[in-house]
Image (cartoon, rainbow, N blue to C red):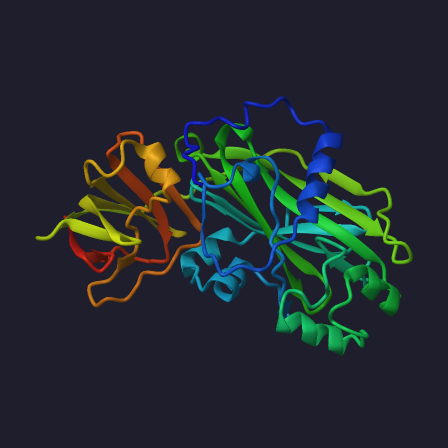
Length: 379
């Protein structure tokens, strides 16, 4: 079942979160481990729980002697090519760095286009000593794929299926559960966030954090801070020792400006048929709007749904309704997803509906094709 949550103000619906509550929620989030999925997007209307706790994915990879950043992460896990201008713009000068217990957290990348923000933080031991760093101590070392299985073999572990607590005991190394979350001002929150990490060959990790934002409230810039946590885990019993943690001072996040925009109108046929079981639902395509930022392109498909099939948006969503949203170039090549990974729907003006998606484009094409059925040309 899907819900349109755009009108909900979930942040203000709850009182300020006590520290103990925050820790409980974070522990709950760490305890939820799902099988690695091939899904390349998430929608702000599909997961109420994501507005309350942050669900961390478990993908981890080993960097070959280098610092892994967003470009590597998006390419390796989602097949998204981050624009070169975005790679350059998000680089930080290491001036934001904090010691939390025995670890040092250094912001390497930070960028926002107002719809989402991307931050990566390098975490390593302050004194350069070896330690095992993970987001959840009871994950299997090799759970993230072949890279980590190879790492386990290289380290001489008895098996890649043992968890990090067992690995720390076998290697006689300290073990830390860590977090490095970009926390946006609640006033600009889009209601969801994503976390993940990649493992560098030197033992450090890169921690990724990506909150969605309310564009109208965030587009002129916003304040944010980092929540940093380092909790040593006893390899003998697996218990967490008293964690070191901090919230940094707030800082201003500048939002990248829109570079160009365009409207695309149908040429000839304007009807898209969406097959649903044995029934075709017809959509009349009104236009596609595109806005380009240094981070890529946001495209919004605007259409109306066939009269008489559904009485309202709620019924349509309950039936698993889907807006036509697959865009390709004139030669039929699908345009890949962009680095925000989000799709946002708007049904306030039913039966007119729209869907905004992030695309991996560095320029606006002259022609796009929607679901292989409607050709639209830039005006």
